[in-house]
Amino acid sequence: MSEAALIDNAIPNADVVKRAARIGAEIKNVHLSGDLPDQTIAAINSLLLERKVIFFRDQNHLDNAEQERFALRFGKLVPHPTLGAIKGTVSMIELDSARAAGRADLWHSDGTFLDRYPKIAVLRAVVMPPFGGDTIWSNTAAAYLDLPGPLQRLADELWAVHSNAFDYAVMARGSEADKKHFDEVFTRTIYETEHPVVRVHPETGERTLVLGDVVQRFVGIPKYDGQKLFQLFQSHITTPENTVRWSWKEGDVAIWDNRATQHYAVNDYGNQRRVVRRATIDGEAPIGVDGRSSVTRTKSTKESRAKVRLGTRDSRQSRGRRIFQVDFSSRIRRLCRHQGSAVLAKRVPDEPDILLGQMGPGWRP
Ligand SMILES: [Fe+2]
Image 1 (tube, rainbow, N blue to C red):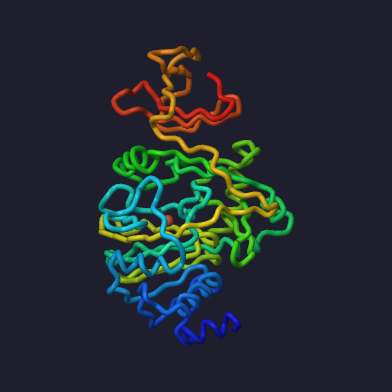
Image 2: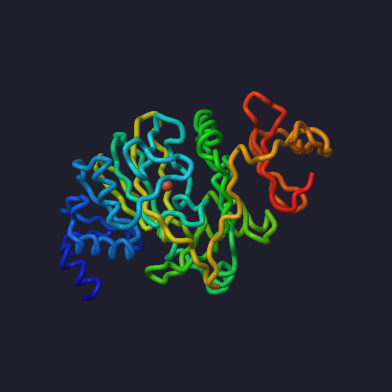
C-alpha cells in the first residue's frame, strides 16, 4: 500500500492540513490515546516523517499517563538524563514558566548532548498565556538541501561537539534562578558528544543538519572559524521560510521528529504562566555520511571532576587530591582552553576562589 493510501485509509486526507510549505501539518478529528489502531499510528508516523511536526487540537482529555501511553506507540520512553522524569511518569518533564529553567528560548533539537538523543518528542500544552508563547520548528533536511553543493560537501565532512554545559550566554533572557538551575541541576552531569554535522536519517535516508545552540565547537576547526561556520549553517536552518510557528491552545499536542527538526519556544509572554509537558522516545546514535556513528567523549559528575584553584600555574597534591592552580579569570562559568584541550570550569558554592574543572585529554597544568 502506498504511503498516501495508508494515510487516507486511516486518516482522511481532508483531515490533514499543511501549516507551512516546508514543514508542519495539523491532523483534525483524532482523539489521541494509547489505544489508537496500529494503522492510525502508522499513518501518523508516515506523516511525521514527511512533515516533521504534527499538531493536534482539542486533546484536553489527556493526562500524563495517557500522553505517555500514546507516545509509547512510537518507541521506548526515555527520561531526561539530568532532570529525570516527573513523578508517576517514565519520561516526562514539565516546563513551567513560573519555575526556574521553564523557558526553552534557544534553537535546539532535544538532548543532542547525548549520542543517542531522542528521536521523537510529544508535547502537550497544559497552561497557556492569553498571548505569546508560540513554538517555532525548523526543517533540518530542507536546510541541508538549500545549501549549495560545495557547502553540502563541507558539512558532510564536519563534526561538532554538543554539550549540556553550553555557553549559557545564549540564554539572553535567563534569570538568576534559571542560572542556578542550569548550574546545579541541568549540568549535574556534564556530557560532551561528537555528532556529524550531517546525519543520514535512519527511516527516510534524508541528510539532516545536526546543530543548534548547544554546539560548543567543530572538531579540528579553530574557534573563530568555527563560529562563522556555525552561523552560516545554522542560518539556513532558522530562515523563516524553513519554519512553522504554532500558536498553542490548552489541550494542543505537537509531535515532532527530533532527528529532522530544531525548535525554539518564543519567550514573549512576560510574567504570564505557561506550562507544557513533554514525553520523549529513545533514539539511535546518528550516523554520518561516511558511516561513522556519534560518540560521547565526556560524561562526568561533579564528584569526578578535579578541583581547580585560581592563582598561579603550579600544581600540587593536597589531602590526596590534585589541586590545579591556573590563571584564568574568575567568571562564573567559562570555557577555557589550554594546550588545545578544553577545560570546563564552574564556581564552587561558598568557595569563590575555587572552580570545579573538567580536564580534557592532554590537558596539563
Ligand atoms: Fe526542546
